[in-house]
Length: 615
Image: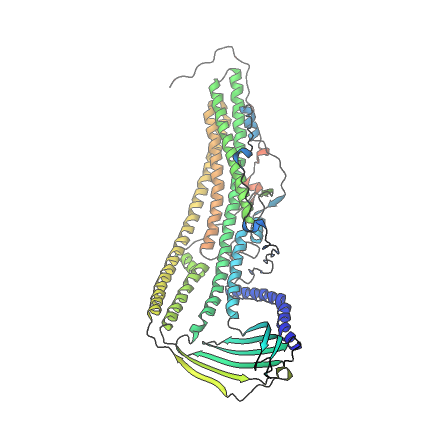
């Protein structure tokens, strides 16, 4: 029985002891492959870790509960749902206009500037973690393929309980006496295989059989061991480097994944900056809208005072109120759009939707580059990582064509096997027969009578090569178009920024002219001047954002954008990264806007108000 226990328990104990150590080894090897691949593309620091991505298994996942086969559904009838109608409050135009410009106080738990928001996204964003895991999966696929080219060890144990009526010679009853017995027979097959680098494999097998009597019958135990070595070596079909094609492709796929991950990080950075600055622009527009409402409120108060003094007809005051209410409605729409955009941004950077968040008022302020169009296009063709992937995949399909051509060759394999028998008393010492009397050597030759499938596979590979080559040429042309578009976007944003700054100056001059001679301007003139100034301020802020996004887009489209591990911008030499913050972007916050002076109103006149002349 000790022989049976030794054969049965030893592999199990080794497997249990090596389980956790083996998983740790897989993690270390994966991270080492990632470091190597990242170093190959020049991004040594951007190495995601696999150790914090082990999902906890649910020990009750397969408990036989009602929810296992029928997941519960909550879907009440309409009669079970409640809907409470809200009463409509009385409408007071002056109160609505005054409340719209009043800041709403609130408690914010998290404050994020641009760098903090990007760092948060690079830490907890679903998009970023998915991209990291695609990289990790490629490295695990390489480890899986590499393992196929290492010595593979397998051990199969087959214990069997037998109740037998032994009537003749048997492994359990070599004496030939008739007897009944309960026996345990144990078969252990141990196999070691190794793939050869240019095709074929070599293997070694050891088959051990042990039988012991478990009853009172007098049966002699019997042991036997057989060992043999085999070689399978292709000479034509499947011979050469084509045998390593899966390993070669897995190694190249790891480099492709490293490039794709870094390309994603750059595009993700540009997208995050674009969205963040979009939130800042929305916040600036809300502040501009509140400033305009304060000015419109002053206009309404002035017109009401003039109407009360008899110096203005009532419909002019109503016109001012109407324009102010339009502005209040636009402000409510802007505030709701801003709240929705902030909620979406929170989800994207990995914050819970119910987390209170305050976006710092901050915009990038990078100076536009001097651009040579041809140099920029050539730089993109040399540096773009996605284009490099597309280029190298052309070589992949070329190898597949050669692999398909190799499949047309006849299969000529050299096969050899040597059997070595061991002395029956295995546990008293291993005594293998070294005479090599029992061996087989031969050549297996396949006559290529039917090669229709192989010829079709070759034609498919050739067509696939044409497709991938055209895709590379199309990607190359698309990159050129993207670079030209990025350069034009910078020029257009610069032009728009200059126009809007001029528009702001004109609107401010109009406002100053009206303030200098208020009696010469109608309420329509006043409200139009306020609206023009708000539009100019909004367009100026939008142009600032578009210029910075265009500069980042130019750096990314030409392959010059570099992003650190925590999401920081690593500018090229000569680029100074600066920021515009609240003091420059919002010089007059809504709670600091001075109210326009109240009009000087004379006592009411007894003379009737003249009707406006008809044009």
